[in-house]
Image 1 (cartoon, rainbow, N blue to C red):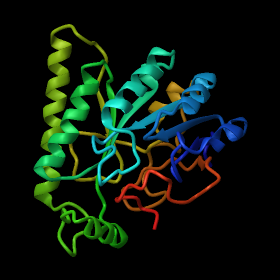
Image 2: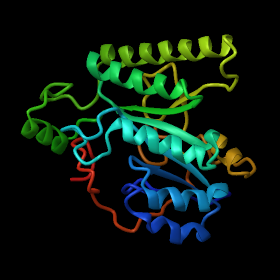
Image 3: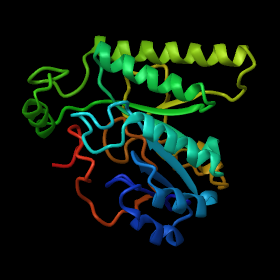
Length: 259
């Protein structure tokens, strides 16, 4: 049995749906995930900064056909920077490049997002490669977008996964260069979950032993073990959903797993 109860906002966007605030008293800490650091989210996070870790999702596709109602990358970058400048600890911000589209253009876009935040001293990232559900393929077709894995593919082929992994190696080298130049000294963490083909990333759940430390909690043997939700998934058994409205949010991202 898990030692802690850790909240998470996977059923929607915590920047749009702030119902998670009312449940913070029922958990030992929380991971809040958003593509939109809205003013209301900014205030709520700063008011509870000791109990939260923020996953700031930014893929580089904001305000495009792929993410029609997500803020554009420049505005979201400014909003994330404002959150840190307002007093939220940078070490408790995870830049979430989720998902990566494993085409040359998509991989280059992800690389630019990661290195842009590295230049500002962010040292923790979380990545995934796009899953092409049947309903996601239908949305891509309707929007006139090519299917990255063809008609029958759901996940990347070995070559595509290797190209993403090579990009992660390149950004790791870029961070090491910054460290060698004395720009930053923090240790880099690039994380993933249920992506067994990625070798240049730390495989851990969205709530990990590292997160428990950041939240001021002691160790728990239930973290970083596989198999709680699906093969290769490393979800913490003590995590609990904090959002009330479990449905597709108004961002309208074509790759959303909600139907």
